[in-house]
Length: 154
Image (cartoon, rainbow, N blue to C red; front, side, top):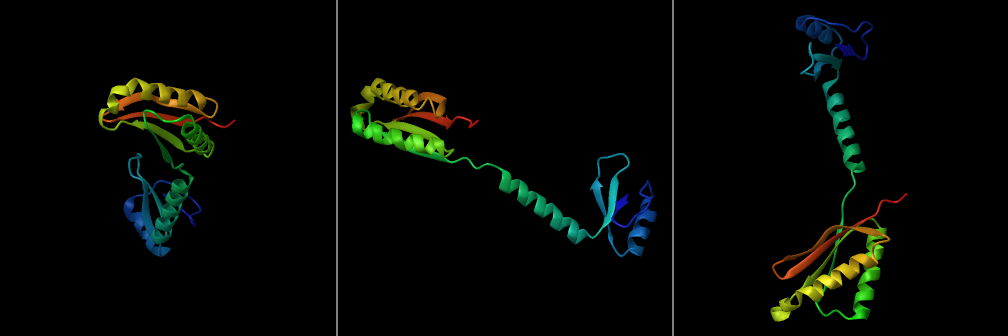
């Protein structure tokens, strides 16, 4: 049992710990129930809950949020459009977002899926300095998709 105002923490029976908590007008809070013997603390329970929520909030704020930006191509995308989208993808990767580039095949353009794969591989090769390929081109229905994640900054 540990407490804020306790001079001599140690092992107590539950009845003694509860009596002591009553004397101090505080609560007996179980900290580690799986320990042998269980660890308890004499503290204000509302304050304990507040501190736990505060810790959870801090951990959540520190967690990184992954943003995925999508870039769409056609199987016969022109060089100018390709370069325009390439610059956008570079900017996204430098900001720390992942890029999902895909070629959308309409109607019979699915016959040119090799062209789409070549386009995506060329795209990944051009972004090699700022990002690394997470998933190679994969055809799913009418879409061929590639994932590129940003490289770690040194």
